[in-house]
Length: 565
Image (cartoon, rainbow, N blue to C red):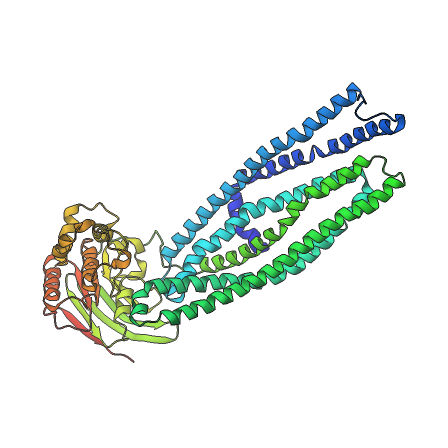
């Protein structure tokens, strides 16, 4: 519970005035809820007087003329009992609105914080976590926290304040009867706390299963072509069914515990009514309680707290879900991000690259390469080739500042790469990955995305496409540059996707451009023309080409071959 408290403190303080208003409305609504109850007892007292007169004077009830004073009093009591709940309903509406809107604001804040943190994390983080896990943190986990800081917090505060007010009113009526009536409440609280510890592992398993399901669906949708190609639908259906059955069984277990808890709450609240009937009736017969209306008030007070207690079960489940979600989000925020210090160097970049005894270890277990050294000046072409798994792509990602955990020195223009401001450095380089990725948007927007931080004119997009030798093919599409290409360019060929990605890198006019085996699906002639353009039009930029096939590159300044260990 302390984890919940410390996590929520930040947001409660941020929206303290809204939470204060919400608490104030809870108090006012509960005052209005309890206000008519004494008038119920008084009304019963008047009705008792009237019926006593019927019995005493043997008057026909239809011929009895009620004294004017009693008539007026009953009318006033009836108005109070019927009108006040209307005002109470209006106040409760604003109370709920206050808590719900505040919780939505907090949800928005947390989602923004998580998304901002996602953008600051190293690539190694994304290799270690599934897409389903990342999506669940941003959706399911945040939703659980919203429910905790919204309706759950509102209901638990309402229950506590209402209980205090109800007990004060009951003690005001009769102290000894109040003590008898509240006996089940502490016992109920002890049982609820005991059962609560069984909810945590079940809810944790359910949330972990949601991640597995999300990841499975995401992978299924991404690999649907491969699944159909290998006719694996039946195999995956069985696998999915197994996951869902496990998920169902965990929910059934949770439902059983939930039902037991609900039954216990109803049982103990029912016992409160029995205690009022037994001890209250005994006191009334013994003359300790003079008016039957007092017993009616006791019954009404207990019935008022039935609903807040009944949803206590839901509140406990919400608190447990939020506790697990907060733990997961806190673990996520503890992940170290790449260097984004705003006070780092923002010096103009020319393109000189130096590796001095650079070593890189993957997962702190295996060296990818050791003591790698080379130097390339600005405007030159560097070819990196070698066997699969020798670390070619890793070198490209180190140059792009995707990884900071390496030994040795990487210098850009004789300054350590670690000393450069991340965002400033990235604005001056382009990295074209071997894994092409395009957004579900127009071709125009996908190319313009390469220079999103500054204004782009249409002619720049067209020129970049022309230089990547994709312009003629784009024009042939029905909507040309405004063709929507679907998720990851599903409507395009691999070669077309690779050239659009290249155009996206060129439009930036970078000082360093890194091409990581992104020509695999382009024909030999076009490869040579593209490389020729890059070396001619970008003569002031340093070009790093990572490839297994160097046959299409005839002009370069430095080449080195990496061997696997």
